[in-house]
Length: 118
Image (cartoon, rainbow, N blue to C red; front, side, top):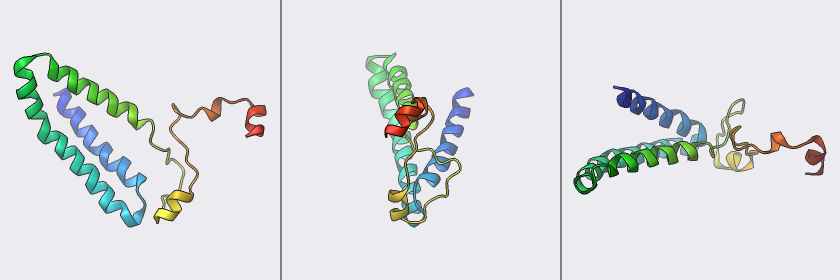
């Protein structure tokens, strides 16, 4: 039951993250590509479970666990969009200053003297 809840939460996160990351003119393609990748993973999961699990019963748990941890870690590399206007065009997206999540933001830990030198 917890697994189904986590899958439902993950599916919603795909919608939220991808709709904020892509500019308006390519948002449909970006969101549909994110959905397609999630569907490919859903289709491939039973094959991994059957093929690899028949040889090594513990391997599917390790593979899916590592994939989940990797996906969670890569999420911290996504830019922070809180308080920013969502871009309408690709040019607006490229011109925008990139601020990444708090975990990956090393600039907030710099001393005021180091910030002035930048």
